[in-house]
Amino acid sequence: MRFFKKGPFGRFSPLMGSRILSKPRTNASLAFQVDKDNYFLLQLKGTAGGDIGNLYKSILYYAATNRYSLRIWSPAGVLLATLTVSSGMGGMPALITANANTGSILTGRVIGTIGSDVTFSPGIAIGDATSYSGGFG
Image (cartoon, rainbow, N blue to C red; front, side, top):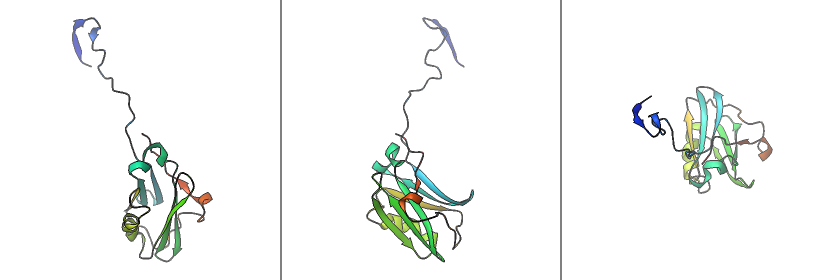
């Protein structure tokens, strides 16, 4: 703690240690995990971030060996895209970026290694989807 000369507020600065109370803007994210070191991370960006980002939903499901599909729904429950990659999860981030419906709102990263037959979601309907979390702004 810093001390100041005695003044109208005593020996302590009235602003010492205080912060401007504002919420930093973060984008909502969703991780489909194999384990704590191996997962696929999706993060909303731009106008999809913040509080509204928590209303988006996604499913990542195993379709066949080395073939995965990702579905994303808007806050209104509209299916924005179904993306399917047949070369393993390593190709999914590029597919997300290249898609007209997802490239401007979503990024994806593979952290660690994801095998060729991992099941992430129990089904393919919006009722089986997981919501994004952590977004505030």
